[in-house]
Image (cartoon, rainbow, N blue to C red; front, side):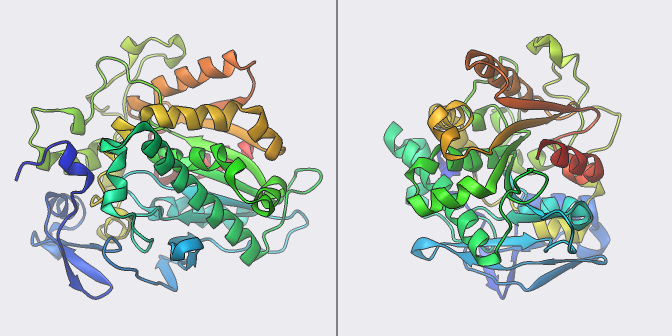
Length: 409
């Protein structure tokens, strides 16, 4: 069946309910099986988390010898967020820092597993949240999600704001429930950092941009806890900036059958790319389509079990992202440059992290963000380029990525 671009907003993989997990039939099933364990699982289908249709609660998940707790937290209006938690680090002289990480499109919070494994040794507590629509978290009704494509400008802005305010409620509720330490007077420890990876930046930026809409007690809580906003590999569209001519992605290719867009994307996005010098700010030096031979795509280093846990292509985000760039840009500029927002969050540092070998879509966005930073006096955003890493740096290069996190906190 061929789906139109608009159809993607409400399109969901058909799920057969069989307990806390389900079997799905999709091209992605064949992809995951082919990549990971063809003989063991066969080509009949692939088990994936089915949180799209119902809530599932977990107590713990064991990855090798590392155990993550996997609780959920309920905020206003009975909205539930599933998250994984690396746990409180061993007692230190310096209070630990909590990092709330928000995943991107197609890969849920399991993508942060490898940096979570390193968290306690770094006196860091990493809490990775599943956004709404992803397994274990309360879905957004389809009619509400549809406004990102078919709604008015005001409806689109309010949709993004709502997701940001929900994330803020999660952060404050978690801080109060867990008693996370505030920022220490010398700033060496304590507090909470907010990290958005890929399209997850849409939610994190919306949270900061709308902090002035929170009740005063929540504002006060964040004022003494929120120490950093980290934008990791945000696509240009997710932060509101245009894509240069020549940009390519499977979902943009009309010559490709629509049913192949998602399984192809799941591989392609994990590739490495040989760009020219990005400091030239010349779009012509970017490699838009063909991956590099220098290193195999990240997905080939994921086991069948890992793919089963974290790969979720049932949520169609791309159409909404294309159609809400104006509203995303408002949030980006307000979160990064608005003096009133900064006054409410006096300890907030803002950083942008990018991989030199990632797909091209984040690099032009960085250039645009740098221009906006200069237009607002410069020095408001700390820009970091990590050499040799791709969009999945926290999976392929967790130690180097962890060091960068610590540097920007």
